[in-house]
Image (tube, rainbow, N blue to C red; front, side):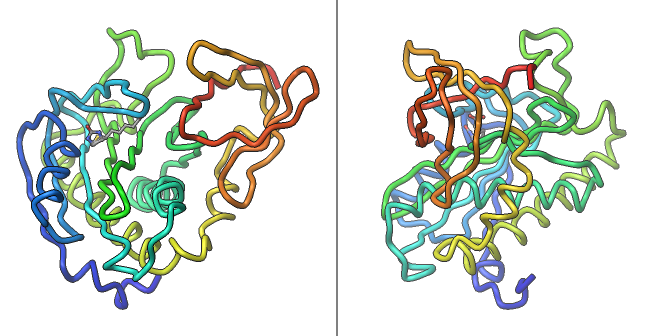
Length: 257
Ligand code: BTN
């Protein structure tokens, strides 16, 4: 998929750390100091991993925690508010494809930024930034065990266990594949949205009952479809229809059909 045409793939600068507060916080500082796009920060553990809407992201050993710096106005000559909105679904498609191609395991998407494996969250994606730059954070649970945590019912890992050499090799292959898929889609599809169908086809919540959470408010709804601008079309139980913008909203998927 156009990987030989990608300019950024040839300009990668990958930094590894055994531990950081947060790869995204670290990379944001580099971005503010002028680091170029294609700068990538990876850590084995994070003491202050961050998720959407101010949540924390548990980042013990056994996961891949990486952040990628992008500068759409310089890389693509493209400045638009939709950059920051579209980069999350684009990354969700690229990371799902990369995990599947390396592990053979099927990955589904829960709008807007969560990747699911066998019905539980296995990866979170967080895009932060401005028109100047985007820091894209990706956290994948490879073997991190949630048995003794409150996340047991909602989060899982791709593998139950892996011997050290196999684990190291897997992580390396995954990083390469993610960067390849991500940067190609970014360079060729961020502006035209060509990844829409790939995103929609993995979206397992279409037709499902959900709770829409916004601040203190919680409303039951049924997901009708995904709109072309990646907002989510839902019907509330009072029959009103709404297109949800991911900014302030999160979803809880119900077990009923
Ligand atoms: C979410 O689930 O809400 C998004 C989680 C994003 C986690 C990744 S791990 C690498 C990067 N560094 C962080 O502090 N967060 C992102």
